[in-house]
Amino acid sequence: MIKIFSTDKVRELDKYTIQNEPISSIDLVERAATVFTSEFCRRYSKQTRIIVFAGQGNNGADALAIARMLTDAGYRVETYLFNPTMRLSEDCELNKQRLLHMEKIEFTEVVNDFVPPELEERDVVIDGLFGSGLNRPLTGGFAAMVRYINQSDATVVAIDIPSGLFGEDNRKNDPDSIIHADLTLTFGFPKLAFLLPENAEFIGEWKVLDILLHPEIIASTPTQFTLVTEEDIAAVFQPRNRFAHKGTFGHALLIAGSHGKMGAALLSAKACLRSGAGLLTVHIPGRGEQILQTAFPEAMVDLDQHQDHFSSVSGIKAYSSIAIGPGLGKHPDSAKALEQLLQVVEKPLVIDADALNLVAANKDLLKRIPPRSILTPHPKEFDRIAGESSNSYERLKKAQAFAIDHQVCVVLKGAYTAICTATGNVYFNNCGNPGMATAGSGDVLTGIILALLAQGLEPETASVAGVFLHGTAGDLAAVYRSEESMIASDITDMLGKAFKQIK
Ligand SMILES: NC(=O)C1=CN([C@@H]2O[C@H](COP(=O)(O)OP(=O)(O)OC[C@H]3O[C@@H](n4cnc5c(N)ncnc54)[C@H](O)[C@@H]3O)[C@@H](O)[C@H]2O)[C@@H](O)CC1
Ligand SMILES: Nc1ncnc2c1ncn2[C@@H]1O[C@H](COP(=O)(O)OP(=O)(O)O)[C@@H](O)[C@H]1O
Ligand SMILES: [K+]
Image (cartoon, rainbow, N blue to C red):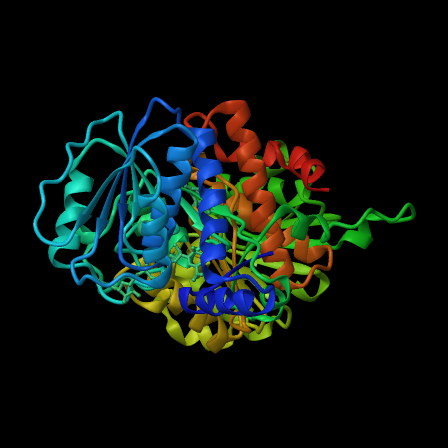
């Protein structure tokens, strides 16, 4: 797991490292500037004109150190230090002196008005105006500078975080006063803001650079937010016992499909058996029998009394795991049947798609959802259940609170799917691609999670591992098919390769 710390916490980690490594603050700045410079040199040629904009704090200190290092490496660098209040942080002042001691530098300290340099498409701007020390939205000269950089065609590389952006909550920020970076090279840890869709235009591509903060303090500092890695998931999948039989891997029940939406049941069912469930029964409306049995003979079928939609289900005790929702429809009979199911079910459920919409239409059902159930909403489905949010940070905080309040796991789907647990933790998934924004890919995810639950994984683990498996298969499908052309069943087709890659 990669921990995601708030900017306040990062400051504490910096401080602890300075005291206990020990290392002086100026040397930590030097270390940050060194890793930034080496990443920068890998990406941009020495022919590039580089314009560095430095602020008064330690983000500015980094920028001035980087200007020096790039000059040393043979780049043509022009540096602008913004110092309107004539007060620099100690490390910034020291780095200014170090830069001034160099030969052949182009350096301007800006105190009042100035004529900004022309910026052209082939130029690279290094943004070191503000980092994690930002404590209010940018205004005045700084905001004007940001707008000037943004309206240019130059490539922008941000140091640590695009200037003007807060690491977490940007609800009260002014989007016009935030740098639009093409690349953000951040120190130590990803920032929460990087994972939220409304910030993509500010951050561009991002990469974490290690500045070797003290491992003890990283390990002992708790955080609710983490990014999932392949190693975390590899540990989840154990080799199968030589004497295993299909009962070992559970009997899953999928309640899905309605007239015109049988495909969703099929997609979900296939993903379930491809993810290792021992047995699968699909509960579908009567008219779906032929379709399902012909297209997918490996699954057993339990027919609903109704021809076209879900109206009741019985015998649920026999199953190791149950999922409900893909293509279910919102018929009033189905609403009643869901209510009845919630009255008798004792195990955690996977609740997706129309089952979520039925819950949204009758919020009393929320209280009946068995503890440790897994809800897999996309943002719109979540808003229907929990109310509208002004942006995705607010939605994330709501999903986190919702998971705690209802003692469930909320899989809030998106580019960085967030798995919010009943204990308040949030696991972000970092694989997958926009090719997965295609009809039915959510149904595939439901089938995967259902299978992992059937095999005995705890709901939280099944959710985190299921989302990772889904994203990995999606990435493999995109390589094979292209993001444009891939469809949901391609994700299922790649599950085998995904398992092999992860294990
Ligand atoms: N030793 C350290 O502390 C390290 C710091 N690092 C760098 O230092 C940065 C953080 O540095 P600082 O804490 O000095 O903060 P910044 O450089 O982000 O900001 C400087 C100061 O600007 C003022 N300020 C905040 N918002 C403002 C606004 N809207 N308008 C005008 N002034 C405003 C604040 O007083 C703030 O302290 C990180 O982002 C990173 O780039 C890295 O070099 C790693 C080591
Ligand atoms: N840009 C993206 N990057 C990564 N994953 C994505 C992206 N867009 C969609 N996905 C994934 O695809 C799935 C879409 O689910 P959903 O919206 O429920 O689709 P459907 O209702 O068509 O089945 C989710 O798991 C989501 O995380
Ligand atoms: K910056």
